[in-house]
Amino acid sequence: MPLFGAHLSISRGLHNAISAASALGCDTVQIFTKNASQWTAAPLTPEAVTQFRQSAGASRLKHLTAHDSYLINLASPDDGIYAKSVEAFVDEMDRAEALGLEYLVTHPGAHTGSGEEAGLERVIAGYEEVHARCAGFKVRVLIETTAGQGTALGHRFEHLAAILQRATCADRMGVCFDTCHVFAAGYSLVSASDYQATFQQFDELVGLGHLKLFHVNDSAKALGSRVDRHAGIGSGEIGPDAFRRLVTDPRFLDRPMILETPKKNEDGAEMDAVNIGLLRRFATEGVARAG
Image 1 (cartoon, helix red, strand yellow):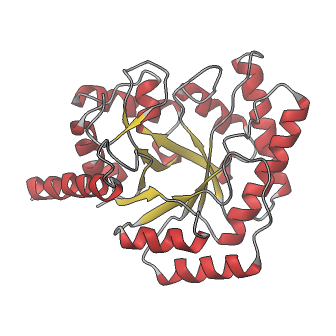
Image 2 (tube, rainbow, N blue to C red; image 1 turned 90 degrees about the horizontal axis):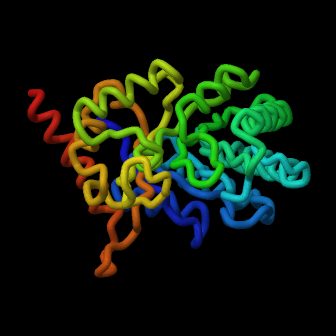
Image 3 (cartoon, rainbow, N blue to C red; image 1 turned 135 degrees about the horizontal axis):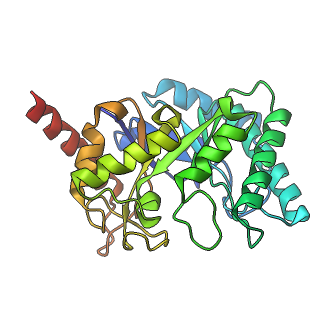
């Protein structure tokens, strides 16, 4: 059975995200290591690092993951923003490494008018500089598929392939496959044939071996809309059958699958446990049918 988890808040302390994940019955968890809407943050204290590592070590959680700041844009043609992004990403790497995290998820960035090829060259150079400055780190950077809003890179599998084929640090990287983003970018997962075709195309261009983690989200917007709006599992345009296929796909049974779905429904009810429960039920039903 896959490893299910959710992105959880660190508002009450980094270690409390571990407690919250355990209370939800998660197998894995994703966090921000700082405010994702700010460039800088106070350094992690030795006490916070120790407390987090002890909590994580005492839990059953695997593949602990962070997501970097939304402000980082290594594809920017603006030298000031690019330099600021490199510094911010090095800090994200430092924080993830200190906490003993396995993965750091990042968006490739937006070219803001310079063009896709120029943007890809910029982001490749950025990843190479960051990894050179973080020599020996164990944390692996995962490039996230994107919905393609504006000039964002990463909405075509070809973008990911170009980065992983050309970057000298590719052996320290991988891919985070976001179901909502991929669908919004125009790759359908709805029918069995759509699902098969999308993953076949991904495998041919990028390689399933690079796919290390899933963000498991339904999409509130239509196929190809290039609008990033997450919905609860089975309640959006993708629908439940795609997630049934995903959680029973033998190729992905060892991959962490992390929710970034809305935390509450219209009535204010907490939804992480509901969505994780749905995924577990789909997986269990698949095992029962196979048996």
